Image (cartoon, rainbow, N blue to C red):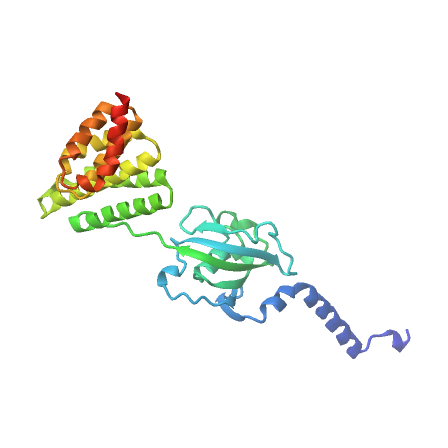
Length: 311
């Protein structure tokens, strides 16, 4: 065989370099993409983070933990840069880290390294690509890349210790304010439900707390306000019968309350809607004796005219 038929050492090395170069060209497209970002090795070479956008949020509550509820955008690619979830990569994904639904091991670890407002690429490979219930089926040499953008992080609120009056007041105020917000947003069903939770909370008041100072007064004040607010939400829902049912029992307890006339107005309105004109007139006659009545006289005058016309 002619010596020219043999590769020289230099030719052989060139051939190998070309082969490696071609191999790298097909396998490292994603490496080329992520190479411009700062790299953090989270778990040896099986989980690497490339920071695209640094979060400016300094609130520790915005750091993802095992109990967080989060909203993210996620793009999944293989080594060649091919998008693997083209129909989902622009959608918001809602994930509860405390859920029993299994997540890819490396994906969960990636999320736990992030906070609200952050965006990063993650290179995940090996056994970190598999869910806990499928660990035996992972492809050892498989590599995937995930571009994760954290839109929102919500931490579950710690349950309030309601074994004392002070904390029960905090909880009652929360029920009231949440109901008010729902009402203002036009969610009358949600508002009525929230006020009802506060009412039920009062009705289950522990007897031992009644001995504490002002406990009975606090209960009564919140109870009457929540009933009044719930009645207004029920009016918006046109549930006049239920509104009457909850308002009538509290009418004798409204003396010296600034919202007394308002409650009478709501009750009379419901009675008229149900065509119970005589009962409506009876309540109008009662509220006429209240010193605040004159501020609302014109409103009740319309009701009274309606009652008179019905006779």
